[in-house]
Length: 402
Image (cartoon, rainbow, N blue to C red):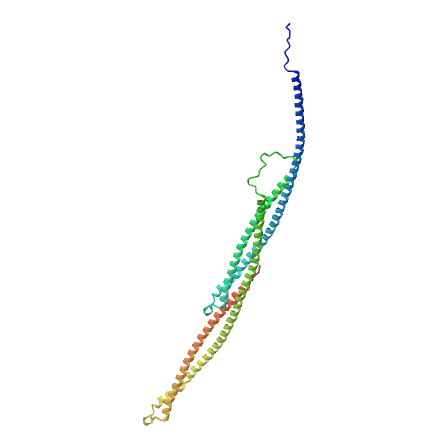
């Protein structure tokens, strides 16, 4: 059996002791470091927990402030939306008033134009450019001017309604976004650490490229409110103008209609008076015709009555030519008979001349009668047109202030 030989020691006792003390020191240092790390960890955990809670409280406060800001602008938008909506509804009612006022002009215009057409049916001298004609033309011009103004104002009103609706649309859109943002932020503000469904979202901690600053956010809503306010004020001013226009145009038309009716009344009275005077003259002329016919008959009879005396005188003269010899004497009888024939011829001539004049005068009276009858017919036609046709139509003219 081989003899074991002991290996020489590798380390000395001193080295062994030093090694142990070294390990003691290292362990102590490591333990102390671990203790310090634990203390630091506890401090850090407490600090981070406090900071996290503080941050969460700050975030919560910011959410509350943000929600308050949203509520403020939401209320402002909602108030302005209510204003512009009510104003637009009112303006739409004014638009209906304008449409009714414009439509109400058509009948008076048609009546005035029909009166002008009717008056073209006047005849001869009565086809005169009188005050009625002038006022009718002015009435047509006035109504057409009123209709043009009402149409222009209606167009302005339609455009303002469009602008009001545009302002209302942007308010509604902004308000809708505010509701959505409020719902999102309120939901976010309600979330807790233990809320089910919360999760990690990589890359969420960033500012979106299309986001705006708080100042831009406020300015956006403020511009929408200012636009709505401008349009509301413009709408109110337009309504005030519409009130004035409707009243003024109705007054203008009524004034002109009254002037035209007055002109009609005067013209009708004048025509009736003239017709009455013509009829009076016609009656006198007809009476004169009867008298002249009687006068002609008397003259003709007077001439006829001279036939007997003429025959008698001429027969005597003829018979006396048969006196014999010296008896054929130019005695006073002969001279008187000859003078008698001359006198009778003179009488017949004068009566015949007067008869011819009377017949001419009768023809003149008859012509005058026909002229008067024709003119009376013309005046009757004019009265029918003005008093019956035109004024009958004009009674239905009603100027309304809508």
